[in-house]
View 1 (cartoon, helix red, strand yellow):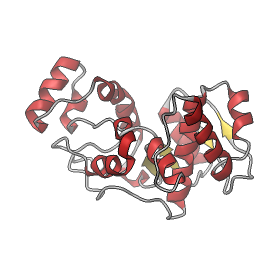
View 2: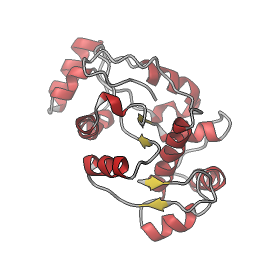
View 3: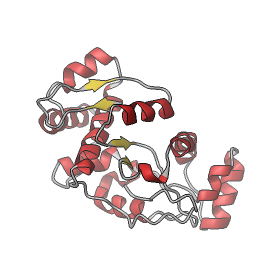
View 4: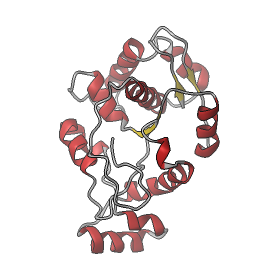
Length: 213
């Protein structure tokens, strides 16, 4: 998790937190302005999230970094083969195993959230955030030296001037730390009413969690 100030000159903090519920409680208690979560929150009954379609359109060549999520009913399925069959029946298509492995995290996030927590706690996609930081042009892969350099430059300039030092001192892998800073940047923009919200916000799963990125 990255915690940032109101402008890049303020001290930031990086820390690893294994459980989302206690983290969210701590953010509530300390009156954090907004929380950005790099995890799918709202799931569509038919398996087609408008927010994903809009985000992939903006990501261009980096669209593959946003894994399409399955139908809401798949959240109740623990077996990969069964989950694939359920999604094909409901959505008319399969979904990736990478997306399947994200579902445990989504369940944990959803269990900790109430509808009233949104948009204070919002779903973000770091690659989309970095694209926005770069004026709408996607960066090269974060798994390359140039990609990590581009992201660190953007974070240092727009998010936290002390990011490089915090990454070294925290011991958190660089790509994960940079994604955390990107999520914090989007959360801060959301708190100020400046974030570019993708998706209508309608969530037909009956729990009233919005489907936006």
